[in-house]
Image (cartoon, rainbow, N blue to C red; front, side, top):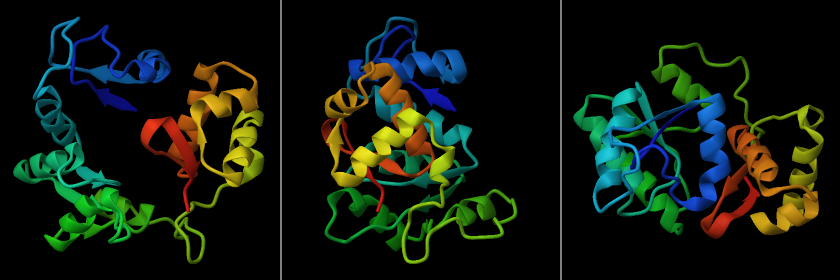
Length: 201
């Protein structure tokens, strides 16, 4: 994974992302055009977004309000001649309004991982990787770590704040956030406002 910062190295923003920041430093890659120690300022994130789209052959907008940074990134991608896909959502959802507007304006709907692979010039998977009638990817629960399984079982009951998940898992917040990130990458959970996590339906 590659993360593009809207501030300089050494600044963790927001502070709640420290575990993710440290994981990216050790296992991924962080990029910034700002000098070390520069804090985010008005306009630094829209400026950063052009680098995100510029690094990508395809920009996929998963959730976006009107207006939003995700829509700004999509606009920069179009200016750079990149392909933009958007995940459609309910017309009553404010976080889907930007995606639906992009589709209305001509962006290709991203209905499965195959749609993204196709735009990258790669073969679609033999199966759609989606449950019939739903958007949750097929994941073998036996492949989850013990901590991921505990978190998954808790989130199946109801969405939970990260502090509640830390209490359920009885481990430190860094390990919980790392496990949640893996579950997000698998497409099993998503993060809502205020660090509340829920199962992707």
